[in-house]
Length: 386
Image 1 (cartoon, rainbow, N blue to C red):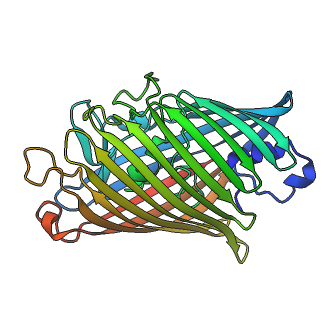
Image 2: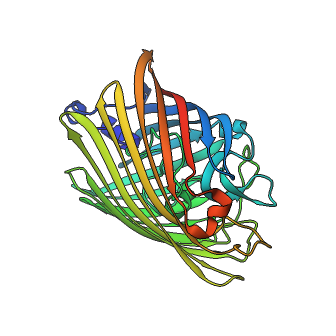
Image 3: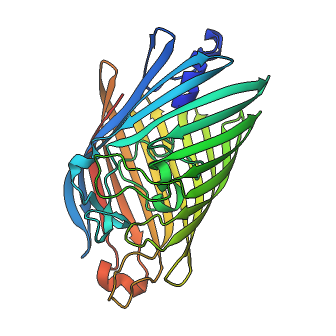
């Protein structure tokens, strides 16, 4: 079973017997009192999105995370830095049918494209103070960082981290994973964790190389249950003040719930996520409640063969802009993706793989004139993992 990176760092502070059975993803080392870990990935992708509103592009997406942990006083401190070279793919990102959100130029919303992530994805710190045999208190802050809202983001969760495309449900579930300013306080007792955040609700702008500042005008709360059996449940609620620069009067009340299950099938690591999110949009325009569902699963059959699948349904209301008569209407779009990765080599700490995925869509009748009745999409990619 794969262990989350933070858990690996915490395990590094524990006796060796606790760590004996862990499969470590990443590179760990000791620098004085600091236990340091690095992990990440880079994908080189050939992307084809079919239909009248599709497109083709060859691009790269990537993430490198470096973490350090050490004992400090009665507790321990963790420092996280996460970087990406996504801005090199260009401000308009890559073609992805039925995706919408953020902007390439600060004037128009990206539609049928996935925006690039910022170069600085996380610069944060966390302090954890034990208050009993199985309880602790913690404080977290980041610029940028991630508030207590939604499931683990798609780039890190075991069920989706090897899939090279972003999910359509990203802006319902985990789009706040890069937040330009956040403070979180929380407590854990046994399998239960409760936390609350104050953060900057504005999504990153089109300038992807900088760090932005703004007041902490939004908030969220999350409850998580982590069972020893590999099941993790979470429910969260957040108020996002003016998340979109192009619609400054809009407010979003976001509700999410998810279940993640990690197990082994005949010795093969298997992770599955079921998640739901609702965006309750209010502001100058009429109130809209739009939902998204996601089910994704990744099975590593052995160290060389991985299969994955993702099914989604989203109420997408940003596909058409004014003055189009369909502007502002929500359309229930379905997507099914499946793929395979063959890990063929290892160079030092880097594992190399080659893979492919194919996607099919369920298109509502009202928008088939724009998208076609049966658009299809595929990607082939080379993947390097640290």
